[in-house]
Amino acid sequence: MTLASTMTAQLINGTALSQQIRAEVGTRAAALSARGVTPGLAVILVGEDPASAVYVRNKVKACQEHGLHSVFEKYDATMSEADLLARIRALNADPAIHGILVQMPLPKHIDSTKVIETIATAKDVDGYSVQSAGDLMAGLPGFRPCTPYGCMKLIESTGVPLKGKHAVVIGRSNTVGKPMALLLLQANATVTVCHSATVDIGHHTRQADVVVVAVGRRNTLRADMVKPGAIVIDVGMNRNDEGKLCGDVDTAGVRDIAGWITPVPGGVGPMTITMLLVNTIESAERVARAQA
Image 1 (cartoon, rainbow, N blue to C red):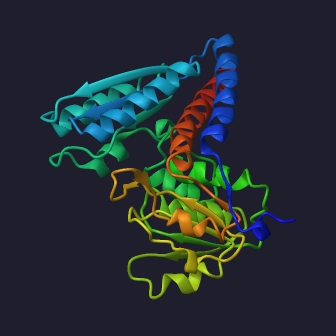
Image 2 (tube, helix red, strand yellow; image 1 turned 120 degrees about the horizontal axis):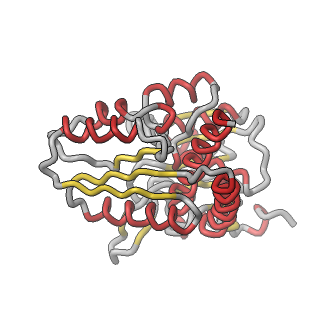
């Protein structure tokens, strides 16, 4: 009996997959340390955004638990753009730091694009810079944005090959939607990108073997929009009427149609931080190879 014919989707456990990948990160970090290289990630938080503070704390904790050296720098919301850029340039020049992450959003007086572009490409472990985006588009080696990178690992974990499959991405952000589409193209899927101006999104998703939803709006993908047996990746993070975390997918309805689905929480979320660790390890390994 196939998973699709049971009419209850198999949950893709992002927590379990992330733990498996983090164990591999720990092994790679130990191997680097034995060669005299301790992978280092600098995380900068400007201001008092409560959600950002939680994200940063989780990133720092993950580093410490898996053999990475983490530098956490917190600054007041009044920090000037010039001071932040100067701090980033100092970290660019610091050989003990292999990755630099500036937590978004930034206070309004700071230009986030300028901040991202100041981070050295070799340390852009978020994969957000124009250079990193260009490398991804051109199929060159480089850092992949952590959330779409994690989504690809979740899709791979189903064992379903993407070659020749039709994938639909709902959302066109620079951080998730666009890089997600490019990564799916690299895996030889045929890709459709839907967004707020798309007429009848369901027309596209009903033909899709894989649907990735990343718009930040509840119930964007409903059961009547899903092809039986499809893989559904829910990137959204919202609150329902009871205040509980939920994604962009109507999970209760969709899981009766889809073959595989990521839960919220416990799906994409844990993978985002995990792929940040992977990118930082890869950066440190490049440095170690150059020194060899």
